[in-house]
Image 1 (spheres, rainbow, N blue to C red):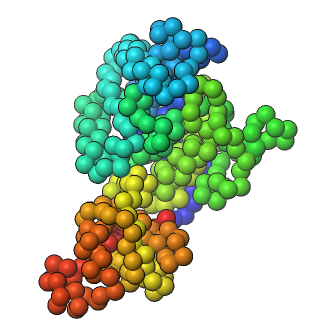
Image 2 (tube, rainbow, N blue to C red):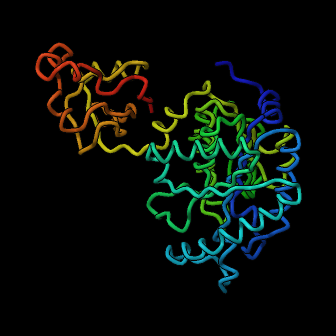
Amino acid sequence: MTTPSQAQVRSSVAQAKTIVVKVGSSSLTSSTGHLDVARLSGLVAALAEVRRMDASVVLVSSGAIAAGFGPLGFDSRPTDVTTQQATASVGQGLLMAHYEAAFGRYGIRVGQILITAEDTIRSVQYRNAQRTLKRLLQLGVVPIVNENDALASNEIRFGDNDRLSALVANLVRADALVLLTDVDGLYTAPPSEAGARRLGYVPNVAQILDTVKVSGSDSEVGTGGMITKLEAVHVAAASGIPSVLTRAENAGPALLGDPVGTAFAPIRQRGSSRRLWIGYAAAPRGELIVDEGAAKAIRGGRASLLAAGVVAVDREFSAGDPVWICDEEGNHLAKGLSSFDSEEVAQMLGKNTSELRREFGVEYAHPLVHRDNLVLV
């Protein structure tokens, strides 16, 4: 695809009919780390203006823990996981109450959706979330999505909702993603360093991920750093969705297409949400190790994986589970959905289609992973 100009990217954001906006904890809190209702109300005003122009909005909002630790008598954000989860269970209701009141002043209804990362790696929950989000938008509701901090584990989290926002953008077939944080864009180095400069436009985020020096964490309030934001932008860009990263105070200008923050161009045409789930959300349950010929075919793209090219299977999995496809050196080539379980695959290794049909029946004369269920990594 032809890379759009910065002006085209920003124009596409301004003209978006469905837009996902993500705001982090640090953009909703005061200097003491407590929820700042004035900052929340300012964000809602900007989103209400977008709604006034007949665009649909999904808000991915952190802030449950920040909203809860003050009312529970804590001076600062708790550090142990159990207390954080308890604080989130109190704070999420308070956060939604503030959003409901703020949006209500503009006659806009809101709906709450809480998701854990584990929900997105299971295809049934993934599709359920997609259907619910789409129906809320059809009803004119602003869905407010948050990671379910009361249940999420430290081992599997989204990272201050950054990756979640990119997955949500694909779920609702969004036209744009806007990430609001406490810095005014992507810099060539941490903004505090001498000589650091803001990048107004990034045509290919995949090429810049390894070349721009970024800090690991934005603040003491949030949990996501610039790395997680760039990863979210990469997911969106690979899904054909343009993004803008900017300070929360610039939400209004960013949504109008003004040259604030950093704009990121899409790097691929829009694909299916199923392929995005396979590529970015699904957790592989096993591995299929392939020979050199199969590896070459997989790398070439649009090739199904046949049993004849598979030399080994690792770990147990069921038919329909996501699996890694690896070469014999252990390099990950692709992710895909296996058409057979691990026991069946073990019996099919190295056999061509004719042999499979003769030995096991016609139902086994199919690819182990069909190309429509395979995503290169």
